[in-house]
Image (cartoon, rainbow, N blue to C red; front, side):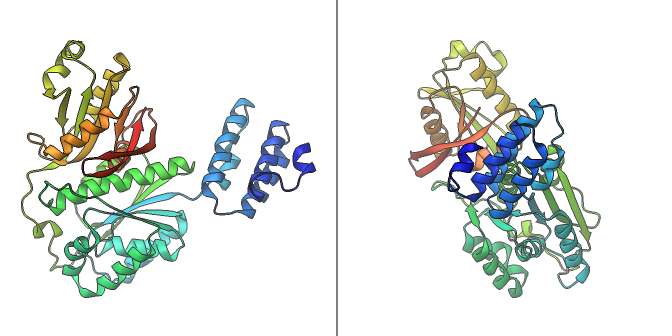
Length: 391
């Protein structure tokens, strides 16, 4: 406190000074003064979300040690993150759809939106988020032009300019790139993976900012729950749904693509663990296949592979392990995917499962106590690969 009083320019900015004063006051037992100082600091830099989140995390620890209620911190948390999705074949001229979307966004006040930009529900929700001042984080299953061709243009030219405007407005745009030896994925399975990544982005962003992840979807009346709704429900986070009538002449987007034999699956790759070590886990060992100096296993049960990898690390902490989630034929994964999984495992120093960005976001949805953190970049055979660790 004396240091702050003696040097009004102490620290990197006005928020840091006010937050540091607030923390000092809290440690001294002056909660009233701490509340006022924190509110003053947030008022000086209202959109410094990560700084606010770091302070809130420290305050939670202090208040827990002091055995005091931390509920008052909720009013200072950064805004929630919203995963959005929905159907294409709706009547966008129905004013009640927009009214319902805007009412939910006005009530929940999300600061960040995560989803795709297909014609219909996606674009309607993204426009409402953008108008409300939320950051748009767009994740597409294909390159922009191809997605525009498949998921926007066939449903009316009036969607194209709206799509282009939202792409331009996005704070971040991610595309799930295919590797050179792959055929183009069917839109059904490509959208499934993109949905999982968007949900993971939403959950992770909320976790980093000490706020809450939520979901908003638009469904057709009487529709059975789609896979992403079930996945989100398992996370236990809030989910809001708007049910609307489908257009009578609506053609499903999946009808535009050929039958797909591939699905979302994972490769668990292990280096530095011989068959004798694997034999400690008889059921596990039989499922692995040799590949050079490593061994790998492929499964559509991502949770099971994650549990296997963590168990192997627990008993063999020096082993180098990677877990790669992508679209593949589980019986015959593409050579480029196996190569990528092997490269990631060999980059490990042991003690953690290594993965890439999209896989890290999907793994964020898995229950259990684990940290998913970016650790650098790997120069892989098909270009640079963002490297993440799961501990």
